[in-house]
Length: 454
Ligand code: NAD
Image (cartoon, rainbow, N blue to C red; front, side, top):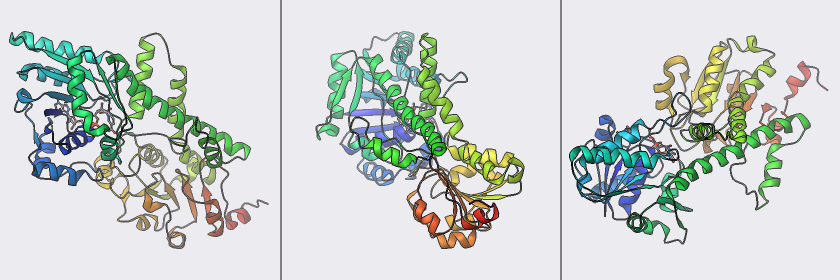
């Protein structure tokens, strides 16, 4: 089978490489010349564990190639996937200009029957717009070619993307023709030999499923973040509550971690887009609006704790803070909507300085933030002469640092932990002031004495 994957970003590149791994002939297309040139030079433009080897292997086997020209391999393809970005428009709705641009390109260059699949996350009704855009180009050409549209939302997680794609819990496919169903069933069969289902449904339901999944996960996170702040007030510990409720199989343990709010390229924009769809259809989703509101506030929670601790905004001016973790989550260099960006911006506005370290997102941070902050070569260097440490992303290497070294490096032994990764007992033993999310802080002996707390 031959496929064209249009858009070679986090989704297109991973899914293209994974399809190639099963023996399919894959052409990845992208308009970004630099990206394609790097890929053709054997360079992977994003950080995703395992991707480099997978790409290298399948390129060597001649099953995977990269081009900026969709017309090269589209005529021979059985399936074309649209995997381009769908960023939020100014009003929060998904901007479909890239998806529909690709649909027009498909109509211009297809030569045989094709299944045109939207893999990008798109609002309900987009497949019909894709169908119309392809047909319009065919009409302009005056050719009579048949094609089907399908919706195949992607559920991979950055950081685990290859495993998620190779061993999916489920594959969701929206179709309205038997022919398209047969083609996609064949293409995906190698991924469901473990017995997990391909769930075929109508196209609008498949489009909705993706938004529903991300919105449900975002809802869990915001619920826990909201509850965390109440826990702090009433003397409960959100981590214990999390374990208590997560062991109930009706609830499950995933996506229950309180922190600095959800970020990344998907949750924020997908929640916004579903809110917009609901408003347009005169059925406002009240729960989802609250989810978004809680999340916006949560991104500033560490800064709020800092203002409280230092006794006012003015007292943060001139201070330097070490910040561990810039990517929106571990195992990726993706900083789209990362809480670190909000925290850094707020601290800089208050006149504070930031010295940051991240195991893989430093280059991406330099591209986005430039020299407004300084960058350390390792996690400990970031803490040298800093007034406090902020933990923003829970990379493994931050989970059990050398606290004695930290104590020596920091001007004051203070940690604001946006990911709840340190044990309170350890913080007490090491005599740190420790501010987690969703439980009472640990105060160091000097802080207690100085502030006359009994
Ligand atoms: P991305 O920005 O990493 O990649 C998109 C790529 O499309 C870019 O390389 C861009 O140059 C290219 N492109 C744009 N217009 C093009 C055109 N006309 N022809 C060819 N290429 C074009 O985006 P992504 O993170 O891969 O996301 C793609 C879609 O998948 C989005 O709708 C997103 O919501 C969805 N999604 C993303 C993830 C994720 O974890 N990143 C997971 C599931 C679904």
